[in-house]
Image (cartoon, rainbow, N blue to C red; front, side, top):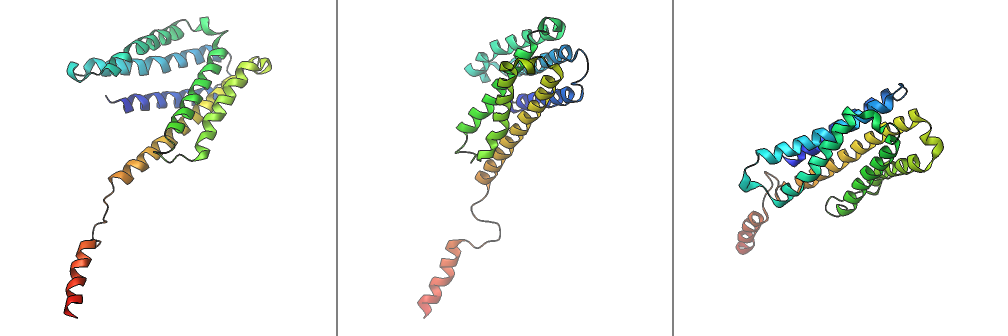
Length: 207
């Protein structure tokens, strides 16, 4: 399994989580289910990464692979606790949600800044991740917003969709650059420059 598969799995899970939170944001006890959903978002990518490292040949493993094992195990344990003991996170879940949104937004902002030259990132690419960061900050600093659980859940669902939208933008930008790099310099059927020279030079000499 390649790393891109793990990233795809993470984005799919966050997309489903966002849709679920938007649809069921008014359901009583939604925070408990939200904790379980977030737990799944930690467990599945961690399991996928650990399987990827385990099945890879020992000679093909790099130091980066081993460095990722500890965070993966930590994410797996944390996710399992959130799924099994969701009620423990009922009071602090909103704080976790705010911090999660800030981290997700910063991830994309930093990635876009680092890729602004290689992928020719446009300025409006930063709008969605900045909105995610703003929503995360507001959920942490506004007591009135924290007291409205349905609003926080709805906002979180929308932010997860914005996260996936930014991931799609990045994927399309990377794909466009790869396509341009692999495109042949001379289109099929177009005459090459040296062929033109060979046909014109004898005509000039004849004159």
